[in-house]
Length: 64
Image 1 (cartoon, one colour):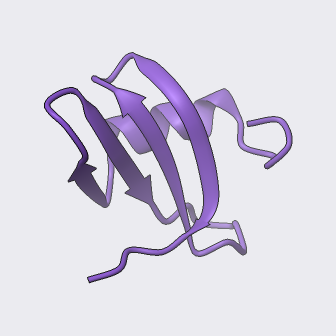
Image 2 (cartoon, rainbow, N blue to C red):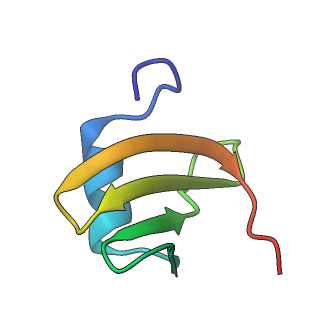
């Protein structure tokens, strides 16, 4: 989070009000959101449930 200049508050906002969720397994998910005021496209949080954050990624793209 520190290396990508993503605050704990932004992570909380993404987890609480996501633009989308991609389920990777029964408990692991990628939760993403566009954050106003940031130049990166989407910020994604890879999490187990909604409490354990594994990593945070900026410039995330959803591939269809």
